[in-house]
Length: 181
Image (cartoon, rainbow, N blue to C red; front, side, top):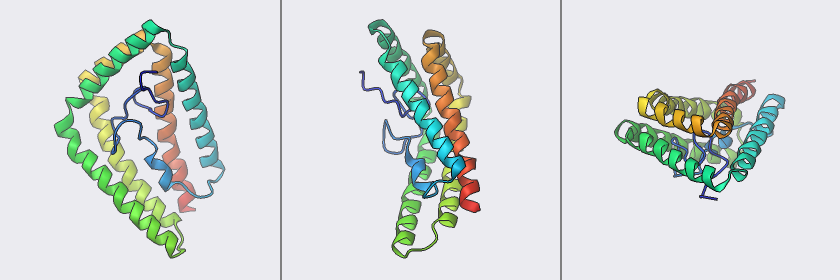
């Protein structure tokens, strides 16, 4: 199916925040409380439903809609790629944040230390890095226009993506609250 991945929350096939490449928007999970409390658990269940809805809606597309989606996604990707010089240092910082905090969390797990304060600190930095990238992408007129074209052509897919993006963003404060309590 055109290599589309339902885990994406910015566009159906590309995560512009990805540090590893397409289909990598799940970095946030390493920072979540284990086990998750009620709020994070509810947010995760909501995200799972969002992902399932997007996947279902993508599977339901006809051949013409798939071609339109592929074309619109290429336009979104091109618009984001045009921001490469602005995004590269921010993506590098996000990748460094992930590498640093992956090591710190792994070390703390081996020492059987309390992970919550560590995860909270890492999540706050991760969220700030992602927000900086999102601000550039979401504010760019080319990206806005390309996403608008997608929304005009395939409003259900665009709505699914917007819901998934919003619900992912809502997970962060829930996780921070649980990690800090």
